[in-house]
Image 1 (cartoon, one colour):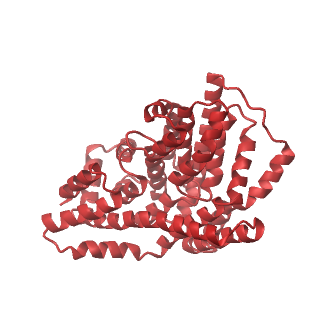
Image 2 (image 1 turned 30 degrees about the horizontal axis):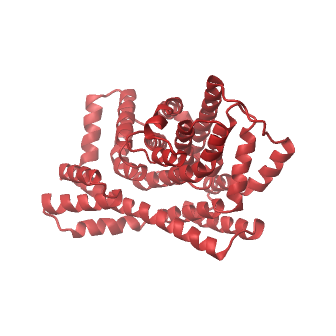
Image 3 (image 1 turned 45 degrees about the vertical axis):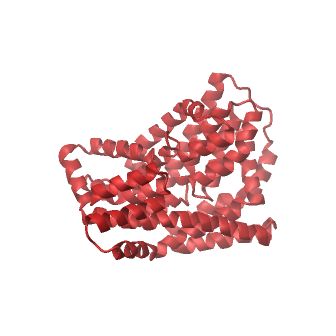
Length: 419
């Protein structure tokens, strides 16, 4: 049944069927025609996966992000990140990295980050004299920071399939996200020096930076408030997501006073559509997960790997290689939902903490978002920059190298993710 599932899913993906629909159709095909089981099993699994209280955090965090980034606050965040980075050689490139850090504490989605920041920053960087392909490569890789800095939608999805605490995952994602940001800023600086890009004389005074920091502080405080609320047990992740929406509305209505009924409707629709896409993938993955469990694939895979490889270092390396390969054609949410149930028992068999595994999976699959041939942030960034995928790919290697170094640290240094 699993073989029929894999083959039918691959065929549907090659036919460009959306991932969520492909998961449901391939599951139904495998269950009905190869197991002789009723299709009601598929419906049961689709429904059962939606009956999760923590899953309510997804739409509310998405709504909070759209509310905060859709108005004056988003502009203030971008201005603050831009002025801070202008003091660096390669500052325009590094602005994308800094903006990904501050936007990561609000949106939680790498694809949304690449689209929102790229549409504003890439044209500006091109006017500063930076090549289109380099701007696109920088934007596509920096977006991965967004899924490490809390709140993170992929980390919430991993917690659903692994049973790991969302609070622990959010706390663990902070340091790897900062390390990746530092590495990418240094990479931007090195590229600017190596290729002789002139430094812009547009740095702000300390007084101006302080003013921008105060104006953007409501968004900068949000990830801190989320972590404090989770760490000290003030509220559950779902409750905090609701409070984040109230917080975002309060800032827009009372502080910035830029909230209109039309904009509120647009934000609701945007968050609703994004939630619907993710929910369909989650529901389809539940049916696929039932098939894998029915065929005992996770247990057999764990036994086969541990008997074949045995060395924990090589097992972690094997998991990373498999994740990199699967992350190229498959988007991040379905990859987490499909591979999580397989990798969790395998990690447990070698004594790897599930929190560390979750960060390793999210970062690894995040790299897949800009790895050819099917990289979502790569396509978005190249399209915004009006350049070819080939030219963008050739500019990726220094950013890819930095990401792989951080991935190795997360994979083999538990202290970075376990506190």
